[in-house]
Image 1 (cartoon, rainbow, N blue to C red):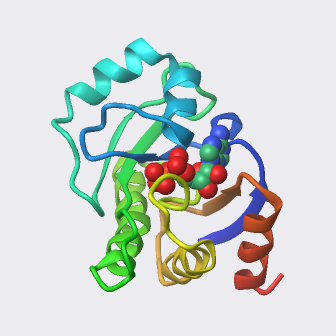
Image 2: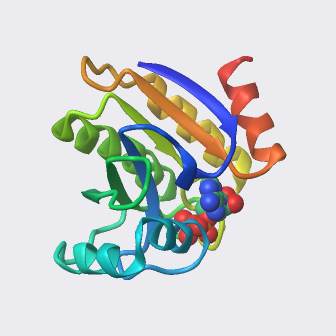
Length: 166
Ligand code: ADP
């Protein structure tokens, strides 16, 4: 699986699946979640999410992408950061792993990730970038060929590139 990092808007990515940094109620919200719901079509996305019955932290569940260029949205729930001593690293790594597993179940060859938990959930960016790249590097998949890390700002991109050794 190839891993790449770009600066961009996740809602614009032409990949098979994009990942949403959702909340456990899958109720929609602010940040990237709100942007994905709006771009997909809020009403349809809300209805599709309501059928999933929520999602535990560290897990992932799919819906169609509706009006998005991506065919699927994989909703994953990142940890709220407290002090790093309450299972946050494991939960964040699990988000990346479970999202890839769901992508495989969907037959998605390409997937794009936002920087899960680094906004409202307060995960330190440097540690989150390290976990994102480290976890994806361990993935062996014959189905998912490309994992794209989409940074919403230049600093996040620079962290990804450093982790990737680019
Ligand atoms: P969380 O609740 O998991 O912290 P947020 O949505 O608050 O989720 O933020 C996660 C990350 O997504 C942040 O780094 C934020 O800058 C980024 N982000 C927000 N909007 C977009 C977007 N349209 N495309 C890509 N990344 C985005």
